[in-house]
Image (cartoon, rainbow, N blue to C red; front, side, top):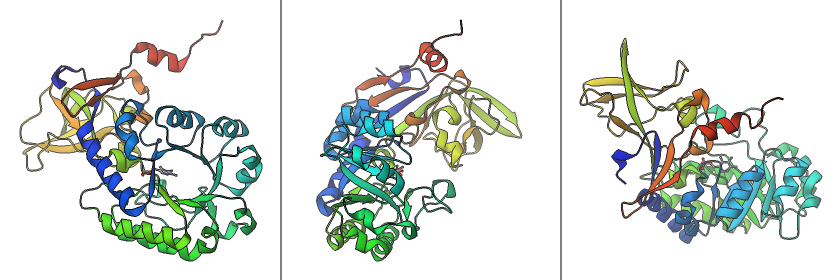
Length: 377
Ligand SMILES: *Cc1c(COP(=O)(O)O)cnc(C)c1O
């Protein structure tokens, strides 16, 4: 199969690039003693889990289906944490998970009796400090519902608790700010943490980013583990799959209304939602920042502001031309939706030997079934 013959839109996961990230995961584990569990909410394309499995220790999930997917297709340790579990959810996840982490003391009290012998119990704590560039994704934002705040802690709750989870970073590329957060956590929560077996420090640590200071991260994790005598976990999502995947699209039209807009056969709202939610423009491989020809890369959805980016090109774009929207692996395939009845991107993996393997493709029946399976009589 040649890439040029594949119908767009499609996601192409590059095995070689994925393995480069996984090598860094392995180094981090070996040097710091940290365990890594993949955050499935970021990336759940289980067709490539055989590539990832051996480099990580397991998965962390929220909803029962996500937990089941991790348990069934990834294996290793299965962590379950949700902002709000129903009793039915807890009953569903307990047989599959090794660690069950509650978001509040009330959920812990209500459901701890449902845990089995092998289930370790954890509680999410909110450190009140964070590293996140946008309020929407800031766990320490005002009145945050995520985790137990320090002044709300009932100290007696730590008896019978195995671990705790803090998640307070979002795309943090700076190891020294992460290290400073750990110091603050130790100062404030230290007496509680000393009573635990493990502490998960969440996700959002961008340790696979080029130039990331891995030495500082290793030292911070090691000293935190020694200080509190705990097994430390990280829950990377984006860091595992960053820069591994293109969304490949075709230009279907070019219109000009003050600016030239190339309309492509995909939409951020349906296929790359975070572009829209976080106002973070995408990057296009074919672009050339010194080029003379500027285009809005516009979506084919009906939403007025739906665009991938504004980019310059060395040559004018042409209808029928393909564009590669870079870094489209995280928080994309897990959020696909059928808005406008757009054609859903297929999902492929390009193996290291050059072979292209199909992981998923969608048709009209998939679309129809998500809307109704039965009509009124
Ligand atoms: C989202 C999330 C993660 C993964 O975050 P990344 O930024 O993708 O690394 C890990 N843990 C928790 C609790 C999360 O909410």
